[in-house]
Amino acid sequence: MAAFVLAWHLLSLRYPTFILPSPQLVFERMITLALDGTLATCTLETLREALAGLLLGGMVAGIFGFWIAHSRFADRLLSPMIVATQGIPFVAIAPLLFIWFGNGLLPRMLMAGLIVFFPLAVNVVEGFRAVPPSLRDVFRAMSVTRLELLTKLELPAALPFLFAGLRVSVTLSVVGAITAEFFSAGRGLGYLVRLGSGLYDTPLVMAGVVAIIALALGLYASVRLVERLMLIR
Amino acid sequence: MLMGETILSVERVRHVYPTSLAALHDVRFCVRRGERVAVIGPSGCGKSTLLRIIAGLITPTAGQVWLEGRPVAGPSSRVSLMLQDAALLPWRSVVQNIALPLELRAFRGVSPLATPQELVEWVGLSGFERARPSELSGGMAQRVALARALITRPPVLLLDEPFGALDALTREALTALLDQLLGQVGTTLIVVTHDVNEAVFLADRVLICTPRPGHVGAEVRVDLPRPRRWEMAREADFLSYVTQVRDCLSLLAYRHPSALATA
Image 1 (cartoon, each protein chain N blue to C red):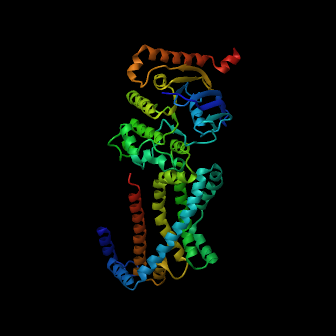
Image 2 (cartoon, chains in turn green, orange):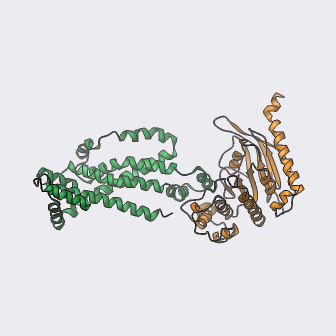
Image 3 (tube, each protein chain N blue to C red):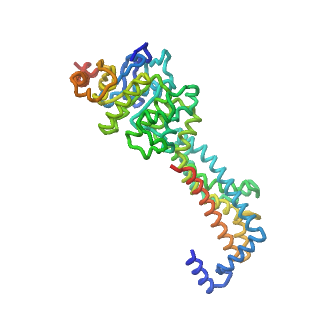
C-alpha cells in the first residue's frame, strides 16, 4: 500500500495535474469534500441505491432460486432465461431504465438489482440443492411442516452458499449503482466522478474512485464479518 | 418383554418404481407391540423401499400398511426413522441435535423419554454434549442419531442398515446398546440389515426376503434370552439360528418367483 502510494507520488511528478494528480492533492480534495458534506451525502446515496438493489435482487433471486431448486419444471422453464439475462450488457439498458422510471431511486436500484440477481440466484439454487437427501428423509420422517423444513434444515444448510453469493453481489451492487449514476444527473459517487471528468477536475475523479473502492471494500468486509459471526461451526 | 396386540401390519404391499423396476411384490407381515423384527435379504431386494413405505415416505403402488389400526398415509410422529447415514445437522451440537424433534410441531405435547442431557449419557457420549458432528466418529454420530430417534418415545423405531457403515467392533457395541435401550423403552423395532449375525442378535423374528422383486419368503423365530450379549454369538443356539437364516437366504435365492415360472 505504502509502495503503491509512493510510486503514484513519483509518477505524478512527471505529469500535469489534469492527467495524474499527486496522492496529496487527491487526499486534500477528499478532505474538502468530507468537510463540506458532499462526500457523506454522495456515499450515503450510492450506499442506499446499492443496498436497495441488493434487497430487491436478493428477494427475487430467493424466490426464483427456491422454486428452481424444488421443481424440475421451474428449472427447465427458468434456468435458460436466467442464464440469458447474463448476455444483456447492463450499461446499454441503463438509459432505458431512466426513460421508463424517471430519475428517482427506482431505476438506480433496478440497475443494482439486475446485476446482483444472477450470482445470488445461482447460489440460492446450489444452496438448497446441497441439502443431503438423507437429512431430508429424516426430517420428512419426523413429519415436519414446510416451514420447519425451511427454517431448521434448508436455510441453515444453504447459508454458506448464500453468503458466498452475497460476498460477490454486495460489491457488484455498488458497480450497478455507480453505472446508473453515470446516466443521470444529480446524486451519488458515480455522479461525482462523471462531474469531475466533465470539468477535467482529475483530483475530483480520483477522490470519487477512492471513495467508491472504500465503499465496496467496506460492504465486503461487513458481509465477511456477519458471515463469520453466523457460521461458527 | 410382554408382547401385545398387533401394532403394525403390512398388507399385500407391492411397489413398482417409475423406471418400471419392480421393487416389492406382495409383501405381508404383522408386528406385535414390543416385538423386534429384522428384515434381511440380498441387496436390491427392496427392503429399504419397504422401510420407507412403512415410514410413510413412499406411497406403495398397491397394498396398505396399518399402524396402530390406522392406514399409513404419510410420515407419522409415532414412528422414528434412523438411516445408515447419521444425518445430523452439522451446525448443531450433540445435545441440540438430540433435542431437535422436541422443537417440531408434530411432537408438541409429547413427553420426552428423557432430557437430551440424560440421553447423551445413556448412549455413552458424556463429555461430548457440546461437540459438533464433524468432531465425532461414525459410531458416535450413530449414537447421537439413536438418541434423537428415541427422545420422542416412539412406539415404532425403523432402522435402515443403521450400522452398515461402521467397523465390526463399533457395530457390536452399538447393537448391544440398542438392545439394552429397547429393553428399557419397550419400543417396537423393525430393522433392515444385510448382516445375519446382527439380525439374529437384535430380533425376535427374522423375515427373509427373496431377491427382487422382494417378498417375505421365510421367517425364523429367534428364541434367545434378553438382554443379549455378543458372547452368545459363540454359543450353539445362536449359531443354529444364524445357520437357519443363511440356509433360508440361499434357498430363496434359487426359488425365486421368476425361477418358479420357468420351472
